[in-house]
Image 1: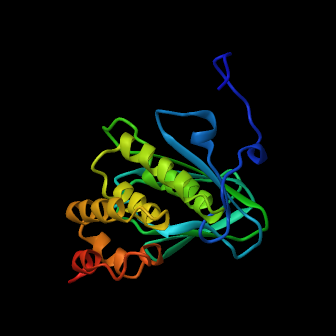
Image 2: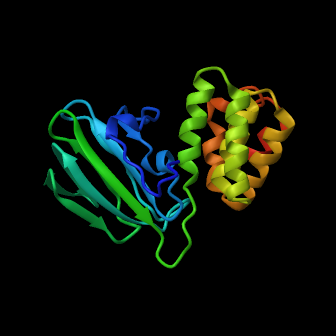
Image 3: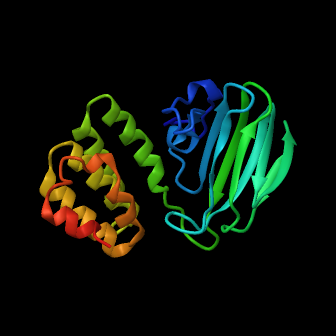
Length: 219
């Protein structure tokens, strides 16, 4: 962090893991250590590539208002089934957390900035930010590092179902089966949707035959 009270970075200097659908994710908030609001950038390499994963903000880490800014290129957003095309310099504000939104690039190297926050609440980083970096560590074979990262996330947001679930995933991969089952159980107690996620999640392959796991995911 800069000691001058301000800091400059080019987009390409802010490097993060590639997202699930293949666009480049630039963790702007994490890079600068921003503590008051969420902000990240996505870049699609080719026309037709996903540049915003389809999602809503109604549950989990949701409740956020989101502002999207097209930095370069063009993007087609789909908002509750309605298509909206935006060129560089255009803004899109999604006020309602329940709106299903996603976007594809219409030109190569289309770049979007996304800013989010919850009205009336102090900002807390979303659990998926930690999870993306934890997945990258796990894919490199460092499951213990992934566990430590998700433990940090849980310390920031104790009793958060998503953090508990992701921690359980990496604990299972790291061979920490007792911890994995305990955290998975608490995750399901807080949000029953994680029972369905766990049932077919390969991260739990090592504990799948454990009667305790089978009881947790039983309908």
